[in-house]
Length: 142
Image (cartoon, rainbow, N blue to C red; front, side, top):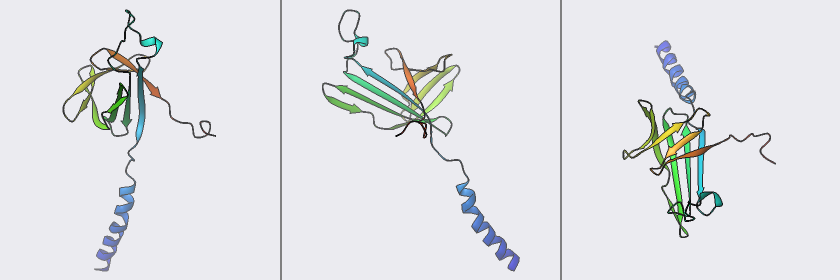
């Protein structure tokens, strides 16, 4: 009986330690896109505006959990900020096509080129998202 109680106590002490040993959940990559329709490099060929908004940002956070990411889209039009909020999405590959898919089934196409750049399709065309580098704790702070 003493051996049984001893084994139960050992298991009771070991289980919390094993639970802490699981992989942590964190952001592995961050991609960002900023479109400013008032900058000189987004003027349409005819001299008009290229987009129907003043500015837009898109942030994609890829997590350590395979296929799970978070997407935030913010648009500014006539001084009003509209945000998608934080949307949990899945990155899936069907055939040779990668997609971001949200819980409602809405999707956007993704394409990684040979240089490792990420391109996202908003229906207008593909836009390059910039990879945000990790902060170097020794050199990127004062």
